[in-house]
Image (spheres, rainbow, N blue to C red):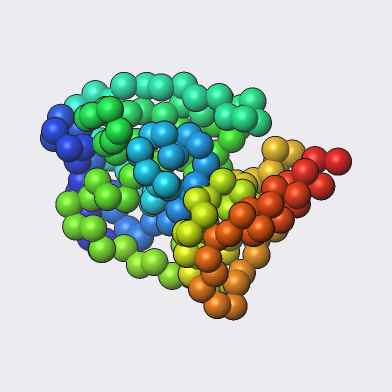
Length: 179
């Protein structure tokens, strides 16, 4: 299998992955928005064995999600609004151990983005005006609910514009699931 390399902006942290990612996540949660300084994060997920740190020492940041589960994330911060590659350790919140900010790869388009592997998280928090592509799984929040059960996804038949109404429907489904 071919090895793909990447690094943070300043180059202090470098990594390599081998093989195709398990999933490609487009996440619109508050954490990912703040971590990237953008409307969403694109993250490629790999099995732990596929990921290798080549050099540098990431800083560890412990984040407790809104569902009150801790996730340890290693970061190399390179500016106030961007983070370099991150390695998500196994925790009770994440089922896939290694995630990498997709735009930190040296080659940006090396991995396949198939609809069944490119997932969209947190429709409930996506910005109005965002276009969701047809044929992709879109989740109201994360694909794991707080009770550990896989969430239901919706798949739009046509490209769909995020509106206030669409977000309100998403938030209502989340509230209904809590009860």
